Image (cartoon, rainbow, N blue to C red):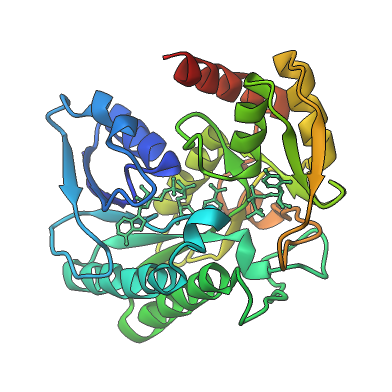
Amino acid sequence: MKRILVTGGAGFIGSHLCERLLREGHEVLCLDNYFTGSKKNITHLLENPYFELIRHDVTTPYFVEVDEIYNLACPASPIHYQYNPIKTVKTSVMGAINMLGLAKRIRSKVLQASTSEVYGDPSVHPQPESYWGNVNPIGVRSCYDEGKRCAETLFTDYHQQNQVRIKIVRIFNTYGPNMHPNDGRVVSNFIVQALQNQEITIYGDGSQTRSFQYVDDLLEGMIRMMQTGDNITGPVNIGNPVEFTILELAEKIISMTGSRSKISFLPLPQDDPVQRQPDISLAKKILDGWSPVVELEAGLEKTIAYFNHLLNS
Ligand code: NAD
Ligand code: UDP
């Protein structure tokens, strides 16, 4: 049994991670400031004596004795990370410094939830870890993209300078139950709109692509990464390489929900990446043959059922 700290544990991915780690027999400390997360995502865990909830902001230091730290605290959806961009940078950068400082002091492992956004609007396709990216340093997405890039730098430097046991995973678009209905990301938006027979809002002409990963596949990859030896630090891409256009996603969701929604085309936000697909060769190699197993339709079915229940309750 390990004692594990999950920052951002009340968010979409964090809540699934807390649940899975508890199921595996670990003690879990969930730290969150509830900016985009919700206690509702973890209320069912509160009665578990091995689960502890901490209201805290990662931009200030926090001290605790744990074996592992998963650093997930950071708003992930463009509308939320752009709401207070300075705070987003602080969360990524100061949050990384605080969690790395803690890991250094207690000699624990620390895993950073990085992102495919470090590749920006990529000119290399699919994206391998060796690609340095194409990121606008002063655009509307920069607070998130550059914050996450700087966090990767800090992780690498703490490892090289202080031998901190780091792991960096670059997460590609992930979806599933527990996403916030007003989160603003494409999968949750389209499902909520389709279930309410409202217009499906495609930004641009819908020809931009994304590769969607179901949350369970991500958890498997992240946990395997945490278990690798100290010589393996990443970064490693964790995503599902099957690529869809946003228009294809909209049509799939309309058909799966039997919705009467019509599609409306709205302006494309600034710096919206045109294409995104992970090269997962490295993950397969270092994570014991890991590869995503949940197909889009199966994952969407579970996510649609979740939102259906949420909207009806
Ligand atoms: P989310 O917004 O649902 O979860 C983030 C959590 O962090 C929330 O519970 C929020 O309240 C908390 N948080 C934010 N700022 C904080 C702060 N200063 N102190 C403490 N807690 C804070 O998003 P998510 O999709 O679950 O993403 C989790 C992590 O994974 C993020 O770091 C995100 O950048 C990364 N990621 C997610 C995706 C994806 O597709 N979901 C893709 C790439 C990377
Ligand atoms: N998108 C869209 N309609 C929406 C929400 C998003 O067309 O209601 C588009 C968005 O412009 C982007 C893609 O879907 O091209 C994925 O957006 P999301 O915010 O989910 O993730 P990210 O852009 O960070 O990959």
